[in-house]
Image 1 (cartoon, rainbow, N blue to C red):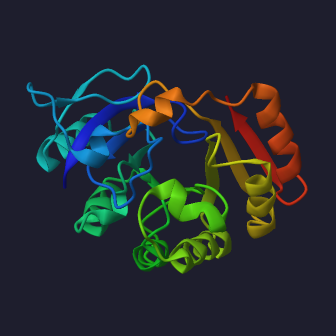
Image 2: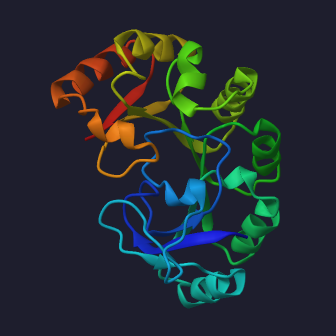
Amino acid sequence: MKIGGLQKLTLVDYPGKVAATVFLIGCNFKCGFCHNPELVDQNWNSDGRIRISGARRAQERYSDAEFFEFLDEKEGLIDGVCITGGEPTTQAGLVDFIRKIKIKRFLVKLDTNGSNPELLEKLVNKKLIDFIAMDIKTSLDNYEKAVGVKLNPENIKKSVEIIKNSEIDYEFRTTVVPGLVEKKDIEEIGKWLKGVKKIVLQQFQNKKVLNNKFKEIQPYLDKTLKEFAKILEKYIERVELRI
């Protein structure tokens, strides 16, 4: 596996659990607002370290052996592992990687952009994941503009239905980027996801992004995000803000 970073302890990435987060390299989307650009374009610092967003310090690139040695040390100390990226489902060895984590009796949370419904369904059917967090970039009509590549929107829709109809705990997440996620997009997202259990609206951060033009975009005011949340509450059981 192409492991680009490891956060050895997190109390926020896996709701209600103490976990570690492993960052996988590579993504099939090119979202200009991505806050982990190193995991998308695979540009490494000269010392072989990759910088993860926010307060997380730079982490070394890990081999599979080093990662699983770390898990052995954490037995009984953490509940689970969050697998994020990048986009984890672009990795050919993901199923075996998760299976090895499950053998060690850790819970697994998967972050995904929903572009690979076939693999997602396989993981669900094989009971290899315990929590799914899927990004909803914007309304379907605006999706290609947000992700920066051509895509089949049916794959995104299929992934939503797989998650919605599974027995696995889940959340959908939207980073609210001005210009990509407007009031009309929020309304359309609500109609599209009507009946799902939970969606999270995340504040856009412009400090570190894949495309520098997004550094010039100012995030919405908190009150605007609260207004967006009110719109979604008409359609979705639970709406959470992460500001």
